[in-house]
Image (cartoon, rainbow over all chains, first blue to last red; front, side):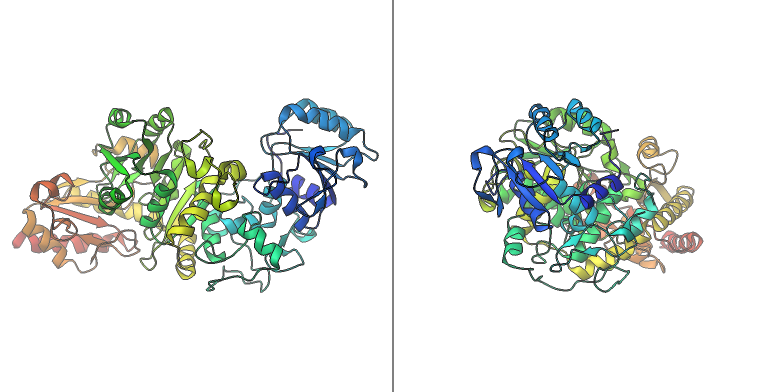
Amino acid sequence: MDHDHYADTYIRDLLDEVKTIAVVGASANAARPSFFVVRYLAQKGYDVYPVNPGHAGKPIAGCMTYASLGAVPVAIDMVDIFRNSEAALGVVKDALALQPRPKAIWMQLGVRHDEAAALAEEHGIKIVMNRCPKIEFGRLSGEIGWVGVNSRVLSSKRATLHGKGFQQLGLASQRNKP
Amino acid sequence: MTSDHQPGFSTLAIHAGAQPDPTTGARVTPIYQSTGFVFDDVDHAAALFGLQSFGNIYTRIGNPTQAVLEERVAALEGGTACLAVASGHAAQLIVFHTLMEPGDEFIAARQLYGGSVNQFTHSFKKFGWTAKFVDMDDISAFEKAVTPRTKAIFIESLANPGGRVSDIAAIAAVAKRAGVPLIVDNTMATPYLCRPIEHGANIVVHSLTKFMGGHGNSLGGAIVDAGNFDWSREGRYPALCEPRPDYSGMVLHETFGNFAFAIACRVLGLRDLGPCISPFNAFQILTGIETLPLRMQRHCDNALKVANYLSQHGEVEWVNYAGLPGDRHHGLAQTYLPKGAGAVFTFGVKGGYEAGVAVVSNVKLFSHLANIGDTRSLIIHPASTTHRQLSDAAKKSAGAGPEVIRLSVGIEDADDLIADLAQALEVAAKA
């Protein structure tokens, strides 16, 4: 598939479908983007498993960290790669070795490895590259508009409250799907 | 609508940024006239203050009504993000506050709104920022003015008051070679007529008070981030590329990617300088923007009719309107403003100062006041008002000679506007 452009429905369905997310390369430094993503996704109700050998056994943003993908004790629905592009192929191979295999592999903004993507797609795994799940969740829920960012989404349907608190929007349920 | 379908300008003008309210179902964006917003819990508050979550804290930093306006303007300009502020002047202050350090310079076209020339020349001097002015038509002068301390180039797409058109792409190429962002004030054109980002601009600023709001009832300004400038160059733009001590060492360009400039303007400039837009004004401007495409086309059509009439009038010496085929900026207007050359222009009346005063004193529909971009037609004689304090020579070089009259043509019936000017010119000729 074309990895220069993703339809909003593709990203929304993917983020709707997954529940457990392993973030490979998550940082314990609260000023780093990877920390933000762990914290934000956890706040949105995903079960997040940071993977960082240097921080294994300690929490990041309240989520327990593991040394490797294989060490995560539950079935992982999505692997989010917070490493550079060169490292992506290795992470994808690790992900393919998981039982069961993840439904999706996501590479962060700036991370792209077409060969790794093709390999994963051969196994029926959905791929997103060079995007950030926090930005995409914020864009598709409408939250990102609160900081003036152009979501490029038009909708005449109510925004969906996430269910806890008022300053939390969720991904649209079925009624927002075209 | 499938997600691959790209909505048109008029659709964006009505829908971008605005969904029905999630709690009440209100279809029109409500006026959230509240200074503060409750946190869901302590963790949520911490995440908001740390810029780790999206949300509302305090109206000096952001407000839900303002946010809809921001997304709307970003969408219309084709930018990644926007920050709405109290006025066009506030927008410029925050943009330069984010880009500049004491001792830095920027290059600005000499042909700018007089208020901007004042701000750049006098107030900015107190921050240690120097504006170097060059002629907007002399591309090589922009090139020659670049020094290692140059941090930006600033132009107006359609310059106020002369109705002159900038060669945005040529100036953008100079900025790119110099490694600095091109800032374009798009107030007079609006994105309906011209989208500077498509021609290479990196930052677009607006006085939303003018044609965007369009009804002469609310002040506002905007900063649009094109998302196309690399802020990572070491030491160049410290606000974006160095760790922020006030955000536990976060580097803004790294964290916010292609909308980092808009975030920096909000969480540094607006946070600390304070010129936020009132939610009520944001609401009024949003309502105005919904009809921007209709109004702007009518403004331009009327302006062309009025300019044509004046150019053939015996009591008129000259007309400066890029929409007229003989005008020296007509070629650039066709490139950058194909739908119309805007609605603000100047003309010279025979009989000099006295005749100028007589025209503005005798109009019955045009309002004699210092604003532009209202539904109502406006008129001003700069030599006796906005430029009164200048010497005769300075008046002339500012385009405010004794015979000069500036019009902002409204959306009334063009025939009525022409009849009004006809009778005022007749009175002036007899005086």
